[in-house]
Image 1 (spheres, one colour):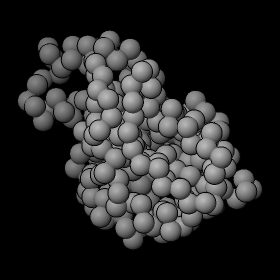
Image 2 (image 1 turned 90 degrees about the horizontal axis):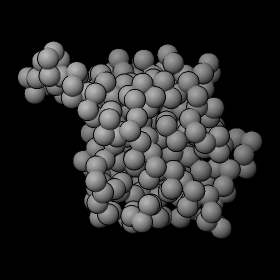
Image 3 (image 1 turned 90 degrees about the vertical axis):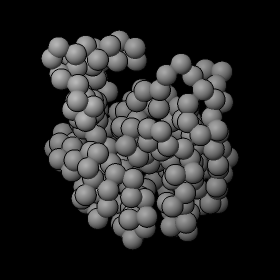
Length: 236
């Protein structure tokens, strides 16, 4: 990707459908392994990869939601070009920032079959404001400058990449999965994203657990598989 190498694992299924799976901020491909068995047993090929500056992938000058999306879109195209993959049945699954990236890619690419969003935040500014409060940095006179500086560095306005805005441009089915005890991203963020989606395309699955409670999703993965299967009806 822009002369950078992304590293991960491709686990083919032989049944055509595939998922590009991306972690969240500070994570790596290995953090998504608890999802593999149930999804692969259901017939989905899986590509788990680490974004730039994460895991074994190459470094870069900085990380951001748009750069996560660039990496995910590259992986999406790689999957669609595989001879053993049905290009019409490639979906995206992301966690936290990776979930925001998945929604951003789906907003740009009508070829995305479906999106599974784990613990997505509604708006980068809201996430940044929570971080500022946690650090004890007042919004005035310092916090607003931090937000403006970050937008300058990443080259995007937060409003343009916010999941609660990008989901309005997503034309494929979306499943929002959120932990009821998530202290990092409140459940209200998931509800805000859901409210902004196109009618009938998005649904919300609340599960026991916190922001990175991957073990907590082992049971609800049955519902994730059912969602993905429904999304692929008519695409086979």
